[in-house]
Length: 252
Image 1 (spheres, rainbow, N blue to C red):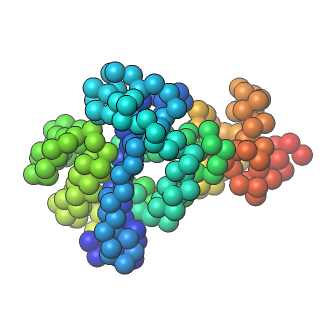
Image 2 (image 1 turned 45 degrees about the horizontal axis):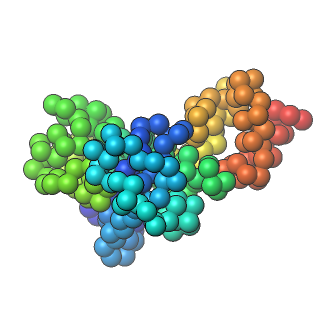
């Protein structure tokens, strides 16, 4: 779509060892879309999760322990992933509550700053916002819009299907957002993990990643002093500027 011209726009999906980003790991990720100049991007990589993939997860995505043997762990792929994501429009289905949580936790484990996309657009959120009839699972929506999804729960197939789904939805519901998607891009613009969309809420800085995502920093200090100390350390994902601001607001 012309409104996305000049952006790197990428359908994104992950497959994992389980459903809990605090203890489970990414085993596959994929990006499918176009670069700023219109060149096609297709990146699909397996990841050594450094833990056993349970049979129940293999039964969903088909990735076994043998498949990831010899693959690079996430830390060795983090730099490339950041280069892809930084400044891009990331499109995924349930990406904010699932895939992006896994990305954040993987970077936190590596002691690295998570990448900063220009925007994250969640097609599940849009389906609910537009009140599309029927079930809102990716497979159901693809069937509704005639999108072929032969290899569901394979990261590259899901990533590609999600991007097509976005175009279909925006075309059908253009009257709800207007022909220009600038408002959509702005409303979905994610924070940098520090503060709410408006910076503070009643003077409290909100942390928007990790196990205390959505909580104010003073609340985290009272619940888990060791975790708040880690947030203030150089090994946390927060920038030096943000760590200094926290110390100035709440420790000085």
